[in-house]
Length: 296
Length: 266
Image (cartoon, rainbow over all chains, first blue to last red; front, side, top):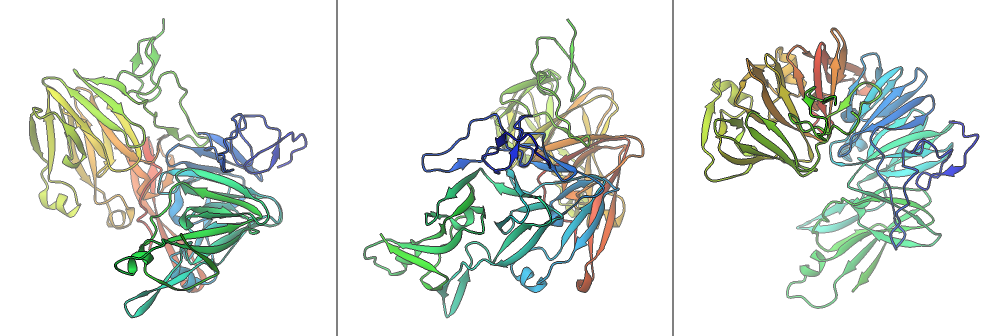
């Protein structure tokens, strides 16, 4: 979308626009509200207003609803999007639906990820929604810009956003009886979305509320692994284990009480959600990916 | 002064009202309609009160709203017993035998609906975030509702259940085997539904079609026909993938919910 008279830069998606019309045309964030930033530097991503429109290519996306928002797209004849089939809510009969082949089928099945994606080509309306209360996040990507997204957060992306998935590289193993059990706090894989041949749009759905933070080079923050939504590829991830100090009448108490953190290392943006899974109560850690340990 | 017409239920309201007296919809807010014509169900303000027969209903809360009814003498409502949140001890109760025992058992539907009679107070809620959808039904209306989606109906409604026609529709439709059918005869009635997530309604013109995810279906006028259509898609080495969508054909209203359980693919 051309922005010849851009005078406003959205603090959430960093895209320039005229700043008129009440919402950012690239990500739907309201432009007329004060930015809410916590003392520690987390910026609260304001929910996209009901009925707000986001423009991409020659199409529009309207976000409707509040608790489980629906992303309703009006696709132009030249535009297409892809999505996982279970997020499709309704479609005009004339929208052309097809499948998109995914490489690495067996590994995707092992990781609990959909084996195929679907494509929808305009013209016509098509709508998507997730299956839990939360916020729809619009992440506009400039040409050659990429973001890494935790699995199962993806809603829909424009056709020019390349999708790759790779091992998350964050894991540890514990002893269970005679066997080693492997744990993947972020999931086995992580998705990378990369805009090519022009700007693209990525829509995600995150349970609860969303917060964004810019990490400076070398800055480090610990988060609950299942709280991560997306990050810039420049942000590095490692594990961090914390154990309580002292003696216990049975040794496993220390392992049960440990905290497993995801350590994020700047520079770059990270986004987290306020809803996260209760951490597993697991035993002594035997092997792990790159990690640090602290006893407190 | 002119009376205000409710955009949701079309009732005529006194000029000084801020919410509709028959469905509770805010009268001072514009109806929200998406570009493709889906209207958001009115988001009822916390503590909104509206009337039916000689009784009142108050909607409390927003994330998982509660419908609290103050039943007058002579009024009654029916409901599935597990949606009852609380009631006054002296509210008289009775049971409605729905008939079709084996069919309902096969369909996973309760054999007995509970009836609460006035006078007294009783409250209902469901088990997940969503919206209470208030549907005042004028005389001679028929509405089909996804099973387990209705919260309560007033005594003037005739309740029955209809089998979804066509084996493919039952197996692949995702709506279950039956739809609850609510019919009004000579007097109006009130139906309360709980939709998961947000609820949207579209009025289809005669012959107009829309494809929806079966799990998202919530209700329809009985004049709307529903068929399951298969979308076959080739997936290279893995063969083909079938996806089933509900094709709704007008005329009439269709209601959908934005949070659902997906059933329809193999």
